[in-house]
Length: 68
Image (cartoon, rainbow, N blue to C red; front, side, top):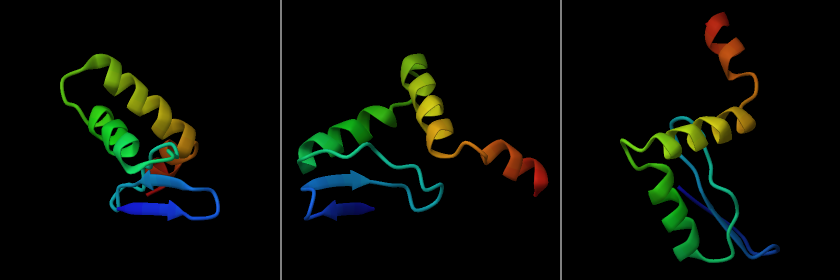
């Protein structure tokens, strides 16, 4: 899903299922490229960065899963 802030001139993409979102970018091409790279399968560095960013966005995720 797309997000755009006219006041800041920033674009983001986010997953409607897990709510993971990209960093803000000033143009659509940059945010699409970032999303594509962050969802590339089989790359250990990409997976490591995705997990790091996910934990940064959702610091209590593990506790929520355990409670469910």
